Length: 390
Ligand code: GLA
Image 1 (cartoon, rainbow, N blue to C red):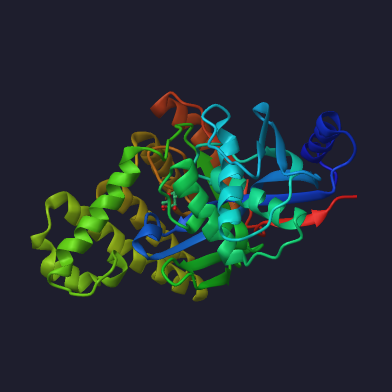
Image 2: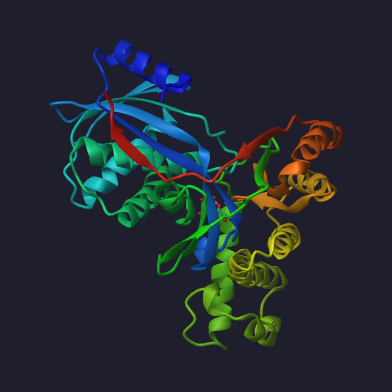
């Protein structure tokens, strides 16, 4: 499996560390088909792992040092497993640092290592390049130290690293997906119990297209945390009428309508979106099982409208991209994906219409926004994997 990225990683390994790497690990990004901002509400999500990933080539060391060379941006980060500090300058290194910290805290004995890494997931585009960094690091530590880490625990440790070491208060979806994805499947995840089901996509004649608006979003953004707090506030207020609820997951839409007048207007809108989105995820999985792609697409569109009007995490560029897709015959459904405020849309489309969509996006999106789009035709791929190199 020669490819350019592998050649670059191996050449760079030789240059920086001498000799050959022994292990290759890759962890993919993800695109979420439906179920947005539901993970931290104990709800459901339905993402796929995509054919864009981060690759790490590595070899153990005899001491406790971790030395990682990133090819993009080209810089080396070095730290000791005995004293892992946050690095304010080489910020990408906080992913492998945080993951090592929490693996050790969970009782795993790690080994020092040297590694080169390079990804092809666009950054800050809502395709989970951060989760792929965490999961590829975790799996590298696992294999280099000859450990066996339960995959769900690995995803949770990666999430903890992102929450508590990197400082981004994300849910579990991205790390879980990067670790557990399966080729040609989407994953229905119950973010409360962490039970999951790999659902065959059977998308013959249908493509998944990801369109990057070129608007970078920062998740550390106060907006993400504000949405979380609004949801928590909603639960607190509704608990008076629905005692025992722990998260919006526990509120059904009829009860919500009964008691919603007790919520401030903004809280009401945010909660309504989340409760409906959870229902949409389950309906869309059923639609897929029934082979009803029209319904699946309709639910994707409804999800976008909710994110735009009620949860208010879309932006004019995401809306423009989605509207362009909606105007193409053969588009089954289209919506923003990921946290929002920029990043990407996801579109399900008949293969026969892909060319028209690409032409329209390339022409109309810059006219409407002054920005250049990027378009990726994606496939659903396996989650993280590691294998001996050489
Ligand atoms: C980001 C977070 C996820 C999830 C999505 C929104 O990708 O990392 O945990 O909350 O936003 O669905």
